[in-house]
Image (cartoon, rainbow, N blue to C red; front, side, top):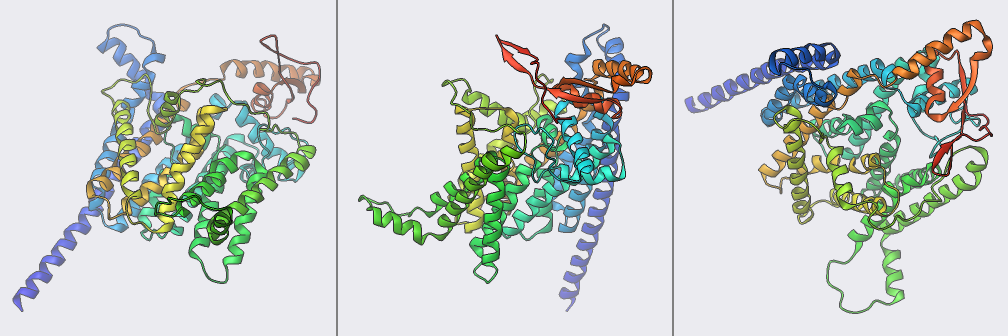
Length: 565
């Protein structure tokens, strides 16, 4: 009897200590995260002070701040880097409740940091692409249409895209900075939700694990990731559509109930819309999904004889999942044909039908590998013994553990849905790397493909068949890299001004508009047309002229593109 009471007392005392440990560590960590976030947010105020200190007290000479700026910025994240590292290493000691609470807190701080950075730095860093995306949203409001006919789109028509978020915000305010900040916030929320939805589809139960996946996907991994996800939101629809399509297919795999027909309809509809939007959706996730199911459908026993056409046909018919993905490919192809034949006759946008094969070696394997490494936060031209330098080493370590965990997991007895996620991730990376190697390669394309690594990380952490060390370091290393890079990736936007020349030019034009109303309309190239509209507070409207390439030079033609402003 005394033994039972003693055990109960010890257990109660342990729970009391653990609860207060969680509260104390969470409160302390939150304080340092908030302090570190404010330090980075106002880094533009501290950098001149640090420069004076280094030049006068340390080096005793002037030096080029442009060269040392990444290193100086790296020192400003020291408090954040320490608290992120510390919490990552002791994270497993938290209760599930405080794991979720900590992830929510740091994600909220990073989201505020991203949105604040977007709103504050827009005048100094806006470019032609972002100005056009924002003006398109304004045009949606003016024409009361989600896809205005009079707009000249770039590489793909914006069907279900971020203008559907930006346009409603313009109803309440005309301030472009506020619109972009809110667009980034809601777009990243949707991005994180898509990962949560996928992880729920594969049976991940713990809330903190799903929150971890959502946070790692939505937070900026690097300056490139920040540019296309947090800043411009350009590739968020590509990732969200892919995650939802994959989630719906997994639910079809697992579902034998009456709503299977409804799920099939949604899946084929998503496939059609994907092709209708752009061929890139098909290449990012629909073709790799078909390849993945084909690989998983192959018989495990070795076949020593040749198969007849009848046997191959029977195999394809009996394998329903393979047939479903094949039909989805057909629907996506039909959508792309509709895009080429119908939509292209109604809207102005370029297509991918003229893509050609490179000369062999134009894009090297080294270029592809370095793009993957830089996508996860590797920084060039940064001192080794700084947080940024340490992060570079951790990026290599994280990718090494990821590859090891992937190889081990594929050899283990996983559920069909989780195995599909792993195989699909390998297939989409390899398939798209093959395309980039042989055709057109732009570094930012990789972001839409590497996004599928995030659900894999959560699957590795949950996989009890993997060793504790592998699961621990996969989670720790990627958390440190991504959460820390979320701050370093956007620092340059807060401390630089890329638009000084155009700002001065527009000041002159605004003055001329007051004197002569004819200056309220003009022509410019795509790079500057919509930026002038932004800097003039829409007092000056500018139509785009299309550049032509002649005799190795960019030249302006005499013919203007109609209806592009």
